[in-house]
Each structure stands twice: as C-alpha cells, then as structure tokens.
Image (cartoon, rainbow, N blue to C red; front, side, top):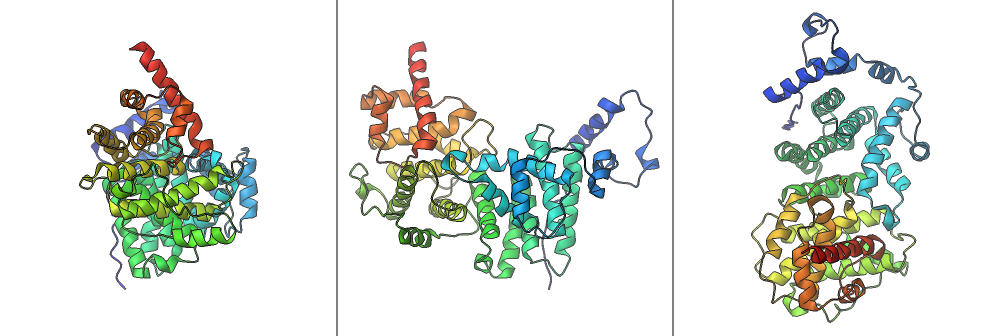
Length: 461
C-alpha cells in the first residue's frame, strides 16, 4: 500500500531562524569561553539541537535517572491510576506535569466542576499508548512548555523536541503501522504544535495528512469505542476551524445519544419551545435546534452548581456536537449571513461555547482571531431592528471573551445598548438575558466585572 503523506520538518530553518540560533549559542554561558567549531565535534546537523542533547538534563533523561525534581502530587495520582505500558522516569514526569499545569488547566474551566484528574488520566492513556507515541508526545509537551514559558519555539529544547517528533512521525509513516491509532496520535501532536505557534499552512498540511489516514481507515466511525482518541481528532479539527476561520474536515453530532443517556438518568429535560423572548419566526430551524440544546445544557449546569453531572466524555461530545453543527452551517470566514438575527445567534453561540472550551483568563492557550474579527464586523452593523436582549447577550458574551486579551473596545457599544434598554444596574441586565445561554458559576463574575468597567468608562468620558 502506498501512503502519500506530507509533513513539515521544522528543523530546516530559514535565514532568520539560523540567525536566532547563532545568537542563542553565543549568549549566556558560552560568553568568554573558548569556542570549538561544532563541525569538528559532532556530525553535521543543527548545532543548537546537539548542544542541548549533550546536556546533563538530556543525559539523565535518556538514562531514566532522577533529577531530584518534585513531581506534582496530582499528576502522580493520575499516573498511577493509568495502565500506561511505558516507563516514565521522574524527569519526564516533570515535563508532563508542567504541560498539564500550563495546558489542561486552561482548556477545562475548573468552575464547571470538571475533574482535571479525570482529564489527565484520560489523555495519558491516549498520549502514551506505546513507546513511540510516548517519546513523540513527550517531545511535543516539552515544545509546548518552551512556548508557554516564553522561551519560544526556537529555543534549543523546543528545536530538539520538535526534531524528535518529526523523526518519529516519519518513521511511523514508513512502517506497517502507518494507519494505526498511535500514528494518529503522533500526527495530532504535530498539528497541536503548529496550532499553538499559529502556523496556518503547516497545521493545514498535517491536518490533511490526518484526514487521509482516517479516510484510509474507513472514516471517523472506525474510531468508535475509542472515545478519547476520537474526541481528540474532533477537537483538533474544531480548533483549526476556529483559529483560522475555515470549515471543519470532519463532522460528528452525538447530541441525540447524549440527550437520551442523560434523560434516562432524569437529568436532561428538553425545552419544548423557546421562551417568548426569542423570535422563533426569524430564527432558522438549525439554529433553533442548537439553541435549545445549549439552553438545556446551561440549565443542567446551573441546576447543579457544585458538580458537573455530565462525565468528561459526554461533556466533550456536547461541546463538539454544537461546534460541528454551527461550523457546518456557516464557517467563520464564509460569506456573512444576511439575516442579522441568524448572524447574532450563530456567533453568540460560538462564543458562548468557546467560554466552556477555553479559559477566559488573560493567559489564554489559543487565540481565535476570526471569532473576534467576525464580532467586530457584526457589531458595526445597524442592529436597531434586532432584539435588544439578543444584542445585549451577544455584547456580554463577546465582551467576556475578548476584553481580557483585546481590551475593552466593546464598552462604547455596550453603553449604547444600556441607554437603548434603559438599564440601571447589573441585576436588571441579568433579568434581560435570563432566557439566553448563561452559566452562573462561569459567566456571572466576568459579566459583572465588564458592567462595572462600563460604569467607570462612563464616568471618565
């Protein structure tokens, strides 16, 4: 069988990257020392990678020796609860623990009651299925850690880790296991790295490779029964669409199954009709169905404030099902929707789901520029004919999503809405949006904070 996959070797640096490498080597601990030409010491290759690979950390890591590092207790619990078929030395555990602190805790809003230990156990089983995926994903985690901690993706550790990732993927694609689950995991690691670095073209090449592998496997349905891996594929696909604005390449909608499962437990009660505040005549049927699902989920969470009664798998199924339906209906970079009401609901629901999917704090793991750009464009329209409450809700969820990283550019528009609806305080605002998707433990505090900033904005004008 011929496998035509194309992946990018990030080690082939351009002129600027090579300049950065030379600067890195010449700085710091090398200053004032006698410099030996690398060509006389080591085989040809990226010098900065070989420099790190000879370091004490690398030697001890490769030998599995202890670095006398404190291993986070939470990771230790998750690690021992998993049936991982590879040995993970203490130095590697530190990398993994750091990755989860910097990544998973930003991807799963803890206020929703999601167990981060459960998330760690689930992903460890996926990421460390065998020795190759373990080594590759460990390299991916180290690369991500370097990026998060401000060392950049051109640091010696990041370049060394990326070289290992690319090498593992190339070897696997040339082996009989080219279509295996672990190969899919390796490719997902490459895509995640490029997404974090916001490299559209590279991520797209890897995503096309993933699509080809899954097509040769017979489609997403062949991953049924392997929910963590299947959902990881869906998540990477959805993130790419949100991050770069295009359509998704896959589609998965498990909302009906999740509803039936939750209903059998007496949890998911279906709204028979939208509240009167929603103009059902102006809302397209697809958006109406998605809105009902999101309202039901919001009610479920609001009714169980101390604990999320949906398990992690079903929570992700809900999130992915909503995103896939919204993005299939209208990609963010598609032709703008002509109906303002549809456009408001469509974007408002996307932003609302993003707040469940990615933290709304300042140190956000991913930027979704097309979302912010679409929001700006939409709010620049004349929305005087749209429902005032609908516009208010979009302004609030949009402000919660954008203001922490983009500033309070939305405040002047929120001020106009305040005057239009004659709102006096936050309690009145809550009454006006009570029939829209809103989760108290997640949105009340940032919503009130946004409203208070509006008061300060008005006083300074």
